[in-house]
Length: 294
Image 1 (cartoon, rainbow, N blue to C red):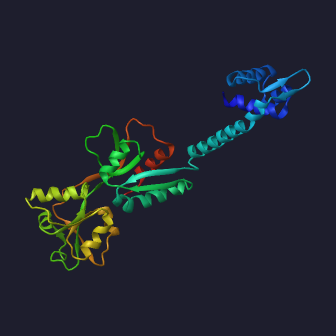
Image 2: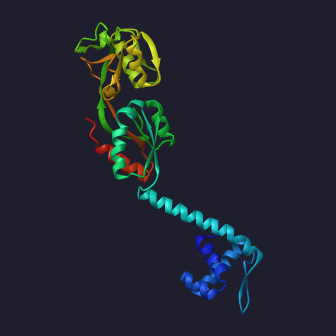
Image 3: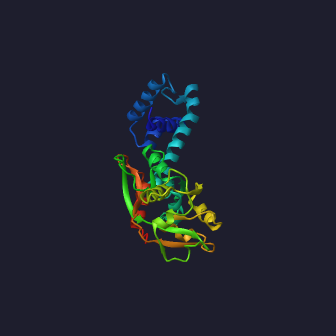
């Protein structure tokens, strides 16, 4: 059964005249007859009774009309919707993003994209870096914004910028008046940081290990936005990605450069290597790559 057969059936059901129906469909009468005959054979019975004077519908033909109308209407709705999506006049883009990227990166990028494609909606999923990589690999999300995944031949990583870190201390801390601080000095303090697995947590632990210092973890939390609240109450020090600095409470905290800041972690957009991207994702990636993150 094809859509052309159903359309021919509905036109003939309305006209009850082969010549008129064929003319409306821009078909020859023989082509219309063949289409109806093939449909009847596929369904297993007659849909029309035809004699020399007129065409009449069978009971089975009458019962097919509402189903055929619904199928054609659904097809037309689907066709219109998909065409609008190809033109980026409709659709929702799901993005998996690290929480700091959601705060510091996506608002400006989405604003630029929305100026060109105002009818596209966004669903942002704040999840840890490692989960983004996992869920993009599994096909749950088409694209993700995260740190460069190591040793993944299933993904394409398009770098956007390199991220370094700033020290976050409460005002009144013994080191808060300094213009810069070393990792050794930082690691010697009680810490507030993110729960594992977390790239930020990993960076801190690596520098503690490098200086043979056991991490004095006072508070661990899930959201990066919570760090400055705990440091403000003197629970410890922390480090944050530089791009997140505008979202820190600086009434009660200070941000200080790290002298021996040798960490430069690439942040970018990932997607599956062998999958063909949707039109929305393709255009969004183009917008992201053109954005100035400095």
